[in-house]
Amino acid sequence: MPVGAGARGANGLPLLSQINVFPNNIAKLTTSGIDYQLDWTVPALGGDLNFRLLGNYILKLEQQQLGSTFNLAGAIGPDNLGGTGFLRARFTASTTWNKDDLSFTAQTCFIGAAKLNNAWGPRDVDHNKVPAIAYVDLRGSWKMTNHVQFFATVDNLLNKAPPNVPAGPTQGQTSYYFTPINGIIYDAGPAISHRGAGEFLKNMTIWQAGAQASCRMDRLAR
Image (cartoon, rainbow, N blue to C red; front, side, top):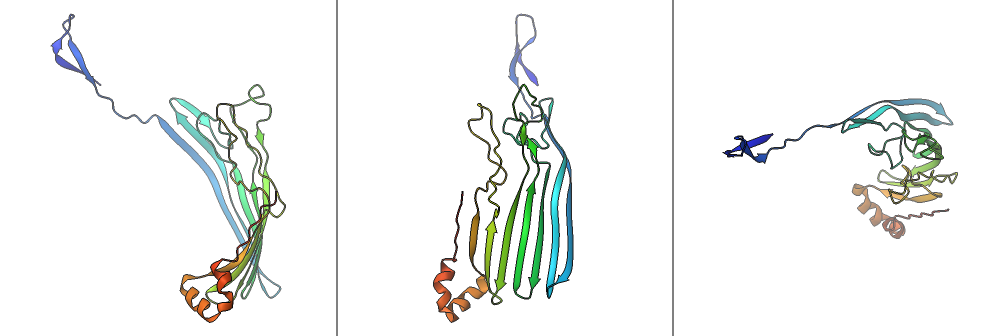
């Protein structure tokens, strides 16, 4: 908004002395999708067997900026003008068996296929697709007392490498994938609640060193 001063110019009109600028809302993000969860439990082998499916699907993800609309649904490359998008489909399916103090879980994390840029065609890039991938993980635990639990996990059991998400020369480096897991990861040790830690270490000193070190073992096998 221009503001005139008292002094006048050669044409007799007031001279411009200042310009007041106010913020304008010139961008908008629109999104919609479906979230879902299914659970089913049945008795099995003297315990309970639970099946769970948890996931989401993005129907629409649009960024309006400076009068332009960018479709970012399923476009995860770093060269999108409206910003980095998000995968359309992903879900986790798991099966857990529980009996008393024992628990075993096998789960699969599925990440759907995507594109680098929804606006690109054959003239822009040779391969505009990012393939889908699924990771398989294992979990096991034994509740020793009300405050102490031992666990063991194996992540990425099938040793799946994450897909490559290449970037254009102006971005400088390859984009980081949503789940940067590369290799099989092992983890095991005790989990001790805060209230029971002191009593546990006092009465069972044989476990003291292991509990303080968390008995943790990680290995990255490429």
